[in-house]
Image (cartoon, rainbow, N blue to C red; front, side):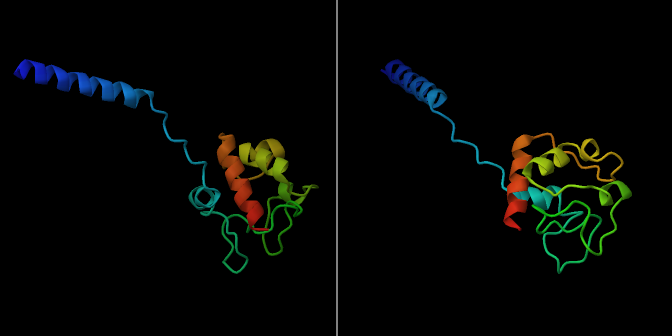
Length: 128
């Protein structure tokens, strides 16, 4: 009798494990742009003009703003001479590799993950 109960318990455990293995995993949450900004960008940038300027310029209102043109911030010469306005495409390229967008700039941050870049850009658009 004991052998039968033990055999049934083992069978139930196996059925449960097979069922668990076949259950789909919950979908991963997309990256949160505000959290990513805080983790990866806020050490150098703010999104509020009332905060003291950090190593990088404030990024509030960056989408549509001319590059290298925040009053009171000293940009590197190559960025100060830039002749474009920031849009999603330019921000994506910039976050991927700033030196490829404007050779000679001092920003060293690079983000290889397109989902992370998109989340940060979406957050920045909200700050406009």
